[in-house]
Length: 223
Image (spheres, rainbow, N blue to C red):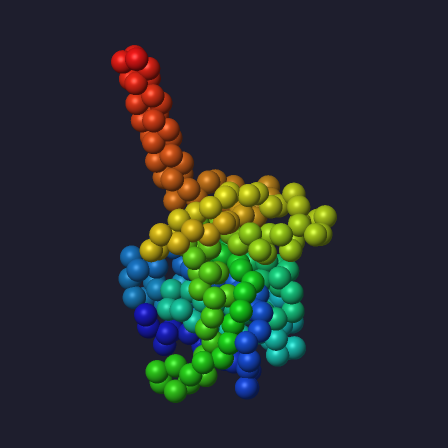
């Protein structure tokens, strides 16, 4: 992935230790199919949209934000509360209405992160918090804002979030890893459709169920 398109370089606080980060992972859907010029234009638009959100600006001014470009998107690590990445995702989703050419999927998770030094001897950040946020995002399609169960449980403590939270159950991602995801949407924000990965899993379970019923009926017929 070419990170030269970004004016956001990876940033981290000095002498960072293991702590809980609230991560928003963002991916441009269909990025690899775009022409080089279109890729650059899409990333510039995304970069501007994210930087214009109040949540991003507030966290950056307070020095409570880490920005990691991923080539076809970015990861934002907030430290204030699990609401921060979710509020940022909602702001981004609203702004996207003026940019129909930009299709995003987003995933949110809270988990441990820590400072590392990458192969270029630059300060970077890694940890389960980022990895799981990416897996949660991977479960979604364009327009989806998916949350890990942990984040959803935190938000459920606040009445105003509850109508937006829709439990989808477990989703299988790479290497057979399963993550419990919750879809965040309202009438005008997010994507209410069941993600394709979960649709496929639902169909597989239905086929298995029918196969088991058929076998059971055959056994009864023999008896």
